[in-house]
Image 1 (cartoon, rainbow, N blue to C red):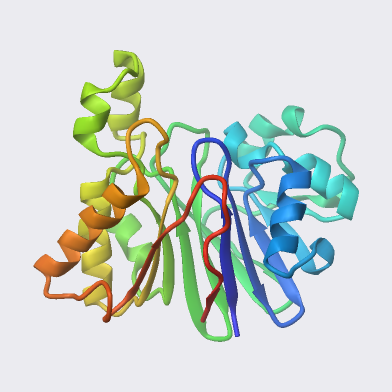
Image 2 (cartoon, rainbow, N blue to C red; image 1 turned 135 degrees about the vertical axis):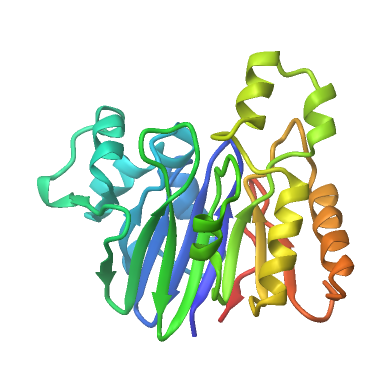
Length: 263
């Protein structure tokens, strides 16, 4: 079976584990190497199975542990050329063979796991989400999304499981303590996805067959897990979908691994 777990999710660091048979990958490595190693041990895994680290974009909460993990465990890092140009000075010295390029629309295969990036709207040089194909099934990781459009939705459709951003509650953000320029950034076309839009997207995808959802990248200041969860539940119930029976819905926390999902 496919094993999926969000080890960390949020503005303080992101890392998602996916495995099948004897191969595993990480999507992002945005906390220290030691914390990622400890989180893997907590779910009964080790770095021995990790065949690659796939980076979504160059922001520190997605790359801060990648360089040390690559050096310590002799593991390649995958990203597109623009992201490599932006993040390479931040990762430290890497072996040439560990610098792997994968552009949006291309794919890379590690063992039985195939990974294909797709563009997302965010304020980075060339940010991507990832479709992961394993044993005829599709999983999707899509966070740091400024807005939802038809092309992006197409990349999410027909997934067995999706980790989708549910970053903030709009009213909490507007009335919160962030400076105006930061509020504008988060609310902008290349910022982050709010709970309400996440709810509509989850309801649409659930109506069209996706059964497992993780809500990720929650803001510490402008959201809380219960609010994100309930907002999405409300959207599901409006579509006559029972979030307790018809699908699996969980919030990925910032400093704690999610439940392990088997697909």
